[in-house]
Length: 480
Ligand code: NAD
Image (cartoon, rainbow, N blue to C red; front, side, top):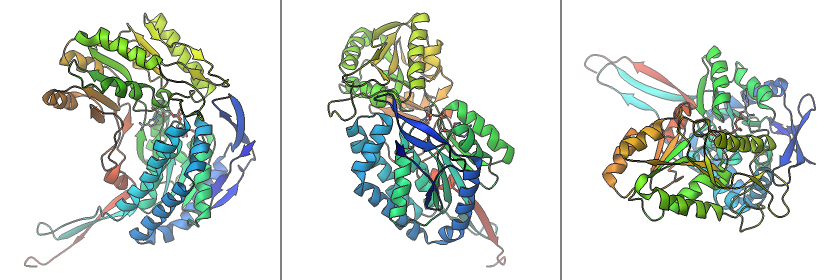
């Protein structure tokens, strides 16, 4: 059994009650590591460590903090093989996906926010009412809570701006995928990252996560995860008027018009099934213009069925398992529900066992014939399952796309520029991709509308979230 620690004040340690949770390899379905279960006592110790580190860290020049973030990015890059292997083992994702895309994106997050640290948010105004200037000061100790689907990437997306802005952080990674956060803490210790600035407290959400949210000296919570947990966290934060940002679930539509460009098919299959559909931005409701519906459907089903499912270490593998046994059962239950709701399974629809893999694999599944108000089309399933729907015109496509309580992302596939603008303006979501998917400029705001999000991350939005603006007004003489 591999062993994972709590990292508090730079010191690896067990949970205060010595209890552990098993960590499973989704490829084999077997436990392979133990993660501290974590307690409120661990959180209290981490808060104390972070408070002690805060005066020195927050007083550093922004460029000095930027240097630390760049050093951390360099150290992850130097260990990219180790990070990739541990993340791939923990999640079952193809090694190539982790090594070529996800860990490099985590490194890019640290480098990007190192640069942002030195871009001032401060404003100044004069000649109206004295001389005013606004400082953006760090909040103090902040908590970041992340999910299992992109473990290091999503953690770094929060850690980097929080640290760059001068805060000390307590990070609570998902207990299902704790490995890369543990390696991050170890890496930080190896490069001499200041103790107590970055504390990683592992453990169960309902104990450690809830204790982090409830702690009165934790000034803000940045959460990514499900809408149900986000709801609970929002209620707990409201009691203390705690600053909060929530990145939650999605049920993203893809709108395919008859003039969609040639690369649409392959891009949409990737957008549906990358990481076995376990990306909040995956398109799971595919809306196709009626004129091309039958042809596009056939091609989509053929392309999806051809995806190679297998072990993460096999370079040919395109699709790994889903993340946990509970999640595996949930996705299969939704496929059964789709059948009950009148859907026809065009491909997949079942568990599979690739060679030498006993874990939680589900074949890419495409379903048609479901009404948009069915449970399958309304709930976030977060697996390798999509539904196809025909639409007649732009208004019909928009009505179907917006008929959701979620509002995270949408894709539009068309060669008509004016139509693309019309759709982008009317879609109820935080991100619209036109003829592309998952391209990200880190300067742009990131987040969702409706039950997908509250607040925004990314670029200066994140720096604003992790700081408190303070306006200072200096009186000047009338002729001054
Ligand atoms: P989850 O909500 O179950 O858990 C997320 C994190 O919250 C974990 O670290 C968990 O331990 C913690 N947690 C659980 N209960 C808690 C509580 N009561 N108080 C505090 N923390 C608690 O989500 P998940 O299953 O790990 O991840 C999948 C979900 O994340 C999907 O809904 C997906 O859409 C969403 N997601 C959203 C985005 C986005 O940017 N919008 C990105 C990735 C994933």
